[in-house]
Amino acid sequence: MAAGPKAPPWKDVADYCSARSTARCELRRGNAGLRSFENPSTLLPRSGAHDSPGDWNPRLHTRAHALACAVSQGIVTACSIEAALNKSWRSCRSHESPGRESQIVKNRVSLVVLWWLVASVASAADSMRAVVFSGGAFQIQSVPKPQPQPGQVRIRVRAASVNPVDWKQIANLAPGARLIPGRDLAGIIDAVGDPDSPWKAGQPVIAIVTGGSYAEYAIASINALAAKPERLSFDEAAGMPVVGETAWRALVTIANIQAGQRVLIHGGAGGVGSSAVQIAKVRGAYVIATASAAHTELLRSLGADEIVDYHRVGFEDTLKDVDVVLNTVDTETGARSVRLVKPGGILVSVAGAGPAAAQCEAAKIRCAVTGHVTGELLGSLTDLAEAGKLRIPIDRRFPLAEAAQALELNRQGHTGGKIILEVSY
Ligand SMILES: NC(=O)c1ccc[n+]([C@@H]2O[C@H](COP(=O)([O-])OP(=O)(O)OC[C@H]3O[C@@H](n4cnc5c(N)ncnc54)[C@H](OP(=O)(O)O)[C@@H]3O)[C@@H](O)[C@H]2O)c1
Image (cartoon, rainbow, N blue to C red; front, side, top):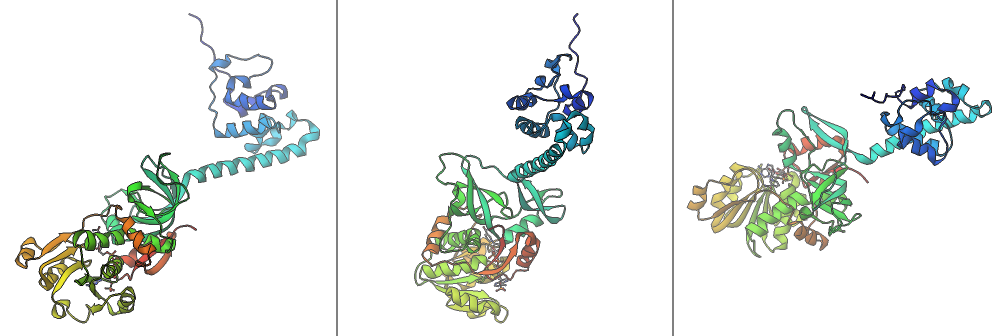
């Protein structure tokens, strides 16, 4: 049986260089240099005294490829580059022409810098900063940039907003799981998943996302996306999707509120409440809101007709004959509100469970819950905002790195409007 070809006696370029004379170490210059790295068999000694090149499969990697580019420029030899990278360039000195030493040193240093620069830029292009919750703590981490699939776009996030669902999701995270929080965002499309997409890179948008918006980039389905209203800043626009859609679904889609109806909004100053007050006013309703006294001014500015400070008075003692209740507070608040609703009226819950069906039946009212946001109603909201009829009051802004503080502030339960995370400019 014929003996199989032997592997060459060197591991890689550096090994090859250090073991051979200048003549053998030198690569041919020009494009041949580049080819020699792409095709290792051409890296053989010119004399031809070598073992079966076809079987030589050295582990050529990015570094070797970068070196090949430099070689193709005719700047230096593979030997000198490798030696420079290994911080032992002097070991190759004897292989170089003496008069070129200082130029070679400069070239080596530039090459090393260039190599690191190219490697860093390439890696930065594929990664992004994101807030990652894992092991019970938040960290800003460098994570792979998500890639859009058909039916999706990738958005460079300018601002994200904090919703109670964000900290609730973290609280319910399985042990060992990790999560980038955030559903809401405003930003600029930077890539589309398919060439026929109705959306184009460069368009400013708002979206509801599922893979996390507390990050420099996020993926959105084209069904959960709308053009950012020009009238709103990115910060304001980021506060609109989840709460705006929830308020719209509750008051318009489910309750179908009509002009002249009396609408009670519990938690009128919060994210959902502040959008709901404005939507109810646009529909011509008489709007009553419950809130802390600290939020009276805010609610007046949004158009509320009557404000009940729930710390001071029991709302069920002062209110009656309401057509629609929107409960954004908790299950108990919903149960206490049933008797305020006129027969034939409706109570819609977005927080906690709705009142018991038997209680609603006995009061001859309808009780409903909104369910989850989908993003499909965003267009109605952006139209209102563009017409100057829906604004997003901002309670506080935080940089992305302070997401944990922003979530904690919201968790305390007294946000007036929205808390915004500023992600990029
Ligand atoms: N189903 C869904 O798709 C959906 C979507 C969005 C939100 N939600 C839920 O709806 C709830 C509200 O969300 P949000 O974004 O509006 O929250 P938020 O922005 O944190 O606002 C909560 C508001 O409730 C007020 N409040 C607290 N206790 C109150 C009480 N006893 N009576 C009246 N007002 C009270 C607070 O202000 P004061 O200082 O004035 O009390 C605050 O303005 C959360 O539970 C959230 O998870 C559900």
